[in-house]
Image (cartoon, rainbow, N blue to C red; front, side, top):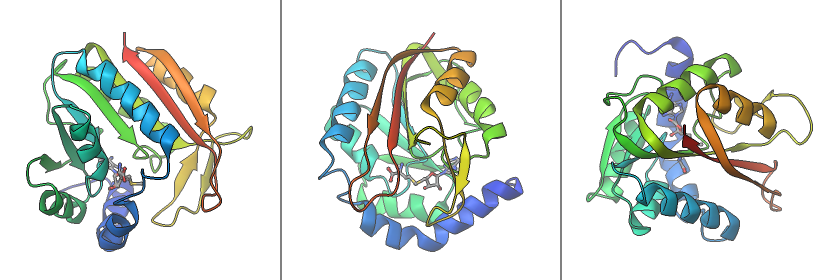
Length: 211
Ligand SMILES: C[S@@+](CC[C@H](N)C(=O)[O-])C[C@H]1O[C@@H](n2cnc3c(N)ncnc32)[C@H](O)[C@@H]1O
């Protein structure tokens, strides 16, 4: 992709540089996480009920996209990082993966049955979240399903932290839910998961329908 705004170039370059290491770390990441798999299963069940394919936006090396395929979804992946997309295509040749940015999707209005953003809006500066959510709402069919996974701020305000790849943000779940509501989403439910020993922060999940 050409002409990315500078903060997106920083994210794309950082993930390009660490893509192989990240893919090794992420390949089996869901195995010890029953709650994460449970909310992904709930997302898949809701998204299967809508017409249209499902997109994993910010799919990285594609292992979560493949997990959704295994749950019966017609799914494809989009990511900023060309190296990540190359790894995803090599690992899962039966699936479609495209380089792109989730704030400017090459998709017609109302065409998706579901969107998964699994830790992919975490690097967006707070001012960029409303336009991201507006783009998600634009491409989802009415009633389509959105699942956001993110780092939760545990009582504090939205705050930047030193994520291993590049700066990321922790969010109060109510703040993110409020922005999603303003963008036209209706909350179905939310899930918080406490960090494991090898994790730093509580995890937040918001499951929503396009209103
Ligand atoms: C923490 S990784 C998560 C990857 C994957 N969802 C997973 O489950 O492992 C964040 C990913 O989001 C991608 N990303 C960040 N901003 C993006 C944007 N604006 N558009 C598309 N992808 C983006 C990054 O390139 C990176 O691959």
